[in-house]
Image 1 (cartoon, rainbow over the protein chains, first blue to last red):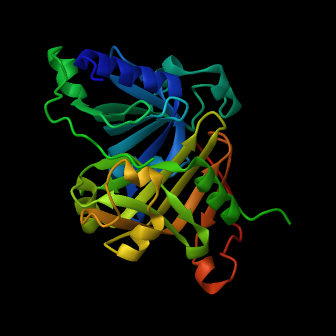
Image 2: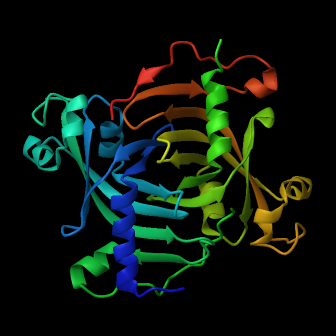
Length: 164
Length: 159
């Protein structure tokens, strides 16, 4: 069952919003690392934001290797979404205030807390394994869809083997 | 004493079953869902893989991979870093062969099947995002029979 390309992109943003917490993977000198983080998507801007802490290691990892991966897993829907992205660490408390949630106050003294920083993540490519058999994968480029308003490129669509 | 953090990591991986296997191609990170055969007694996580897939090449270039297991409904998350090795070990392929594999290959004798073996180096797990993390050095406990060095490695996630 192939959806229209536009629907794939909508489905990707839907999964990001629904799953909420993703595994953010970074490259470090010692290898790859992942950690769960709550995503704050801004579909209109084509961005995914995160609130994070300057005292964690990942800011340094991202500053030296900004190519990151986001994995969203929806077990109940059997949907697996892998996003290749570029991340930027921003020590901008105004931006933090914009995406701030009340639950963040459990960790910090508000968006002006000196340990707060934000990650601005620009998704580049998404691969989606979706549905009961997850045989069809939609791989496409965010940038193309965003910049041209055109259909994302599904030409290089790969059938991906998912071992269930 | 309650189960060790290492036991908990193995248990969570078994329970969640499917992970996102992340590889590094020298420039970008790629991940794909893979069904994990979790074998603590062998100190390894196995996957059946297809030689025609891009990840095999990436693993040959850079063998350090990351397995991300997540069950958001239960708020269980595991990140495991390890060393990946590809082989065509037919005996192992036959041993792991089962219903899930039949969706992709007709028989365990298919020459495209590869075994991907991941030997854990270290792992972290979370029982909720941002909550206490246990950081576990997955030293080869299974090989030596000794407990891995857990020591003072518990730390708090800084989100």
